[in-house]
Image (tube, each protein chain N blue to C red):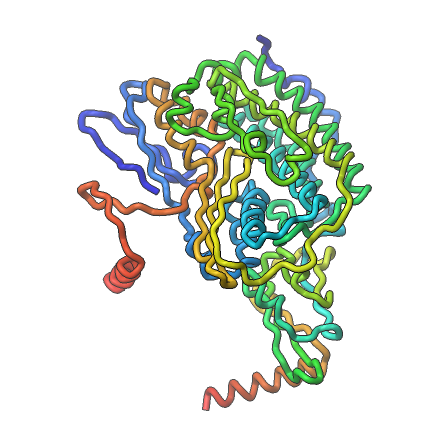
Length: 139
Length: 400
């Protein structure tokens, strides 16, 4: 039996750098495989909606503008996303990626968590459609 | 779940919990004491019942992979692993050997971080915060590796049905081997600390002894059972996945006290280090996933069990041929080990209770799989889904 078996660890630590990092002043680079914010490429999408069906958190909505012309818009609810990357696995056309840079996603309001992806004209059309639907409903 | 709570008169009862009885999870214990000695113990669990099993019936096979991952915050991979293994057997899909090896690699890395986490918590409960700080600093090495390998520190999401998501590159192999060397050196030091430090041994040696007969009678699982001399480890008894090619040696101690539980868990780490090196040096070649995994799974039922860091995790999965499981039943090791705390508590000092509780490495949120309702007379009573729903409606109507 001994006493103070951790003594050398404690004394040795006086001459060592702290194990912690002074975030946010100091940053450790995130690993390349880190699963951050989702990114969607509308060019390759065929609108199969498997990503949306398999999403365990109901974070993805694929809105169809014109199925024949392959015009789709993705509504990404970042606040619901659990960053599990099942959508990447489910997508057969590699439209979805997860950023390893955008992971500091905290915000003080809900607004930045509603992300829309798509071609500009599709987004505008989707917005117009929704605006129309809203007015119809209120009438 | 709820064990019957009997309050006997003329006894002094000390309640511990539900907030943070020993670790940062909810559970309510009542210890009847005679002076400082505990004479009776009861437990009430169920504070973190989340209805995951019911929830699983409303999600498809892929979505459930991530739901079950959230049953436990520490052994997240092992739950997804067990589930995936069960569903793959149900669908009669053979997972490629490389994927199986990667799954076991992540499972062993997870075991290291889980045991190190427990080690820190247990040291903290013993009042040895220096050991707690240092062991958690070292645990970060493994967390960083898991983050680099899988993309997340805790919920790795390494599995998909029919394989894994990522490969292990040469770069990863190098960093993992370096980290394992470092961890092995540190674990040797920690093993020395827990077996020789006079102060620490006062808290662990001869405390909470569960002998072989008791361990068998109470059905204890995992490292807690192996510390009492029970030779029980799913990885050895029924090798699954890559454990068939990479067998593991069972670590058994016979003393059955808290010290033996420390020793078993730390010695298991050396086995994990050895296995990780072996897997990385003999990684099978091949695909990471099967070409196609069916969305609908043919009717049938299956059980799947694996050795989690805390003991055996057991899944029962039933399919009716649809896109969602008909029934998913989970049994986690803490459930089995909880009774041992109550049995061991009697005759010990009240101050030993947190240590005894931590000794089984409990995970309360894993535990709470079902709720039994006791009325004021203490009668058990089964409620139907409709009755429960009606009760909820009435309860809130009354409040408003």
